Length: 106
Image 1 (tube, helix red, strand yellow):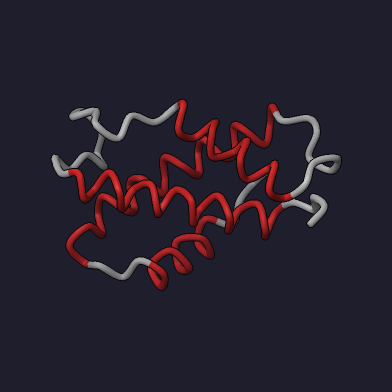
Image 2 (tube, one colour; image 1 turned 120 degrees about the vertical axis):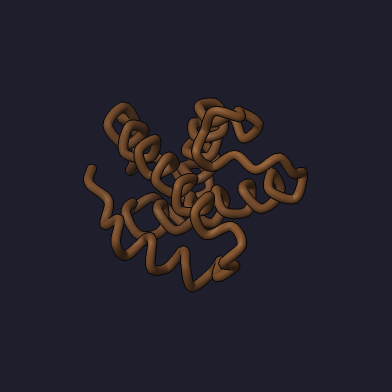
């Protein structure tokens, strides 16, 4: 499934407007969108699960494939605040993607 990345980036910037972490936020968003598209291509049971279950599954997939403490990633910032903020960004992205791109039961 192709995601409308421009719309997602625009919504992300409106919800997380902090210019201090803008480059890292955009890099993390790009990484999460790539993983989300991978997840959609392998997930077979999109219509039989609730949106809550889909959010949980997608977030788990993203978190399993993302190391927020890896110093080689473009979105790494050596701060526990960044790990908290990145978790909030990932949660927001997962909710946005599942709500906009799936038809799971509410």
